[in-house]
Length: 405
Image (cartoon, rainbow, N blue to C red; front, side):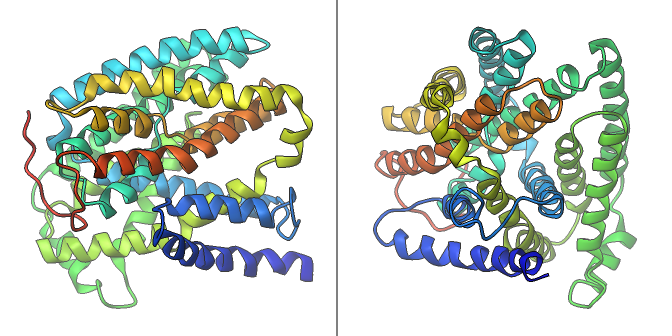
């Protein structure tokens, strides 16, 4: 019983320790918070101390944290700001990434299907992980930040579509029909949400905003659960439903007063980044097979190869979406942030391992490369951005008017 209770205490404790360490280390060098969450998970997991074993219960809570991370990414996207040049160019860059990544994946993989897994994993960008970093740096509304938003939107949504089409276990034709069905249902929901002012809905939100009812939080969780369940029912990846839920809720809540909208955003961020999402990153560290990686020569060779490939096949095509007038430092920072990927990599490799279509060594090397990309790339990128001509420190969430269409 004590062994089963220990993770219940340790995981929240590690989630508390992580921001403390991030703040202390931040006096010398700014390191993303998720780095500490992942590293603490590795240390407390089976690979080092063995205090937190891998379990079905941890996997379930971790999956919900991952879903909430994608919900927050979808909820943060303002298509009115990223549409046009940023989104179009980001889509072109991602298309190039996908083709190059799949071709290289097939060359590296033991089978063609293994190569497809590798390719989809390598062409992702972790917008959900980058959003807090951009927000804290006051970059959400700058041309640079909007470019990253567009790249991340395509870099998360694109791989989710690819997973649903090619890794669902169904024929591409059947998978396409199911994906279209999901898109129709989700599109109908977004259309209905955009119709009218929804005065009764907003009155209920405001009436329970500071009561035990907390209607808006319960509503969001219900929407996430419903669309995740629908995506699973249709044989699509659950993260597609979570991402779409974020878009739907943003539209539904867009009619709220400015002060109410800020309070709602604060509550959702508290639930997501204060409670649920940290479990995913800690669990990612717990589940990482460090011993297996160190004992597998092929995996050790593949890890740096995958890390370099993230820069080449995912990072470089991100330059298509670089804002007009971007400096050399901006472009280098954009490449690094575009190449930052972990959640999609975890999702893809888990599917491959469950179906025995991806080897454990390859999966571990991919996840290891994704973890290193989160550990290293944003750190270097934001340092470069701060040294750029317009990249000085800003107050969080400071509004900046884009200079391009």
